[in-house]
Length: 394
Image (cartoon, rainbow, N blue to C red; front, side, top):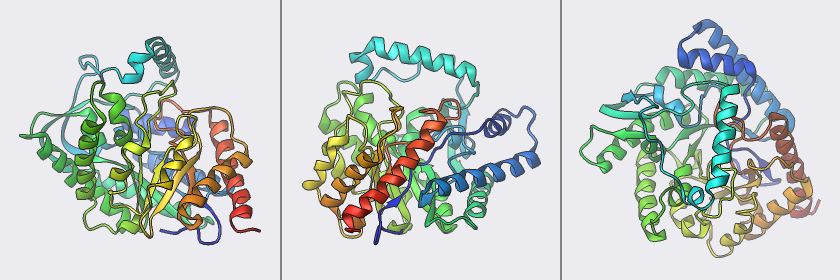
């Protein structure tokens, strides 16, 4: 994995806004309605190429496919794992309220109404799917994964970028919405998920791409489990770190980056789990780079955590220096200040400038307007150039 040896490299978290044509193709494949395999293959190849080109044009160094083929950063896995059956969403109780939702019920009611309205505007099933495990888990997504890899590798061939990465979900986030009705214990179930995800992880790395593990559950479990103590949440996270590392067995650490965040939660967020409570556990994940939220007002101060927590030699931090949860476009000078803070505490060569979270984690809802998302990425790249002048005294 490349490091910021002579300038601050830039990247993002993974998901980017999808065009209407991408949504049409996703919807056709997900639902089977009017699906034409040849049209899908040609269309998605072109869409991924356009996404990569735009990332390069805006100035990003480390790019991906924008998750253009995925219905959702988690739900995409539904078609790639055998041993599951869909649960009728009308019979599923859904997730229990979070600490934040309990503290601000009126706010979350408004958010739910707005989300429901926007879903009507852009209808697409399978953006979140409830499933139950009814048999042995097996990875069956080889064809879809092979196509995703091929489209991305073709797209970067003639584009001036430093590296390319591909995202994949962590075992614990599959565990969250996929109920176990087959394995004798939760531990056995989690291990089976890790074994299956190992196939996806290894294929991405074997293809010459950087693997990014997406694991928002690490940071969100505390908020999702009202009543649980910090120590109880740490124990929960520790078990899931072991599962991620089991899934990463045999994969070189320098081909892996790990991302955790607080999900698409544009709300008060006063009960976000503080980084200081789990940073040591995060750093036990066998990855070279760690991507965290660091730009939104709830977490911008947490750069100070790394005054006491030291990165091991060769490790990289990818702090978010623009946020996905506010529509204001950050000033490049503010972006530069954020980068410099981290560089001063962990070393400039150990920082890659990133984003708090994805801009289009679901094909149904963009986190911010697409025009705002691209403006934020431009501010990120411009801010990195300003930071270079300070860090390399240019």
